[in-house]
Image (tube, rainbow, N blue to C red):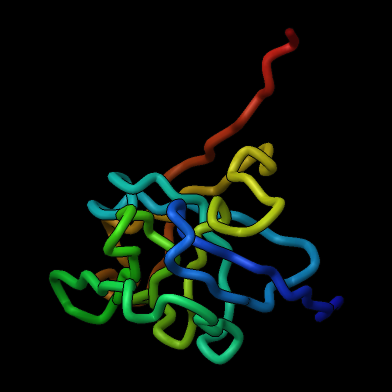
Length: 141
């Protein structure tokens, strides 16, 4: 198994918030169909909490939490962009919005599995389900 990581630089849309995060060399993006994730539509990659550092604009970050209060969604108070969130199913990890990462786009992933957050593992005896798969096919023009 390859455990190599790369340091990525990330920022919100307006540039008020900057962060670095160590992620695996070969990223796997995911989406979720829970109420907040379905609305924000972010493709996320996962990192240990200790592997993400806010380097600028910590004072501009706001946290939104709902329902169980475990997940902490960090967003820029200026532009509203969701940068990362501490997950409910893996509270020792951040789900990082790949659109915030320098040189990366959610459209870099041809297929993105969608986890079933509506039937969350913490509410479902620890059982994880996949809700489906999103596919991106670039236009041929």
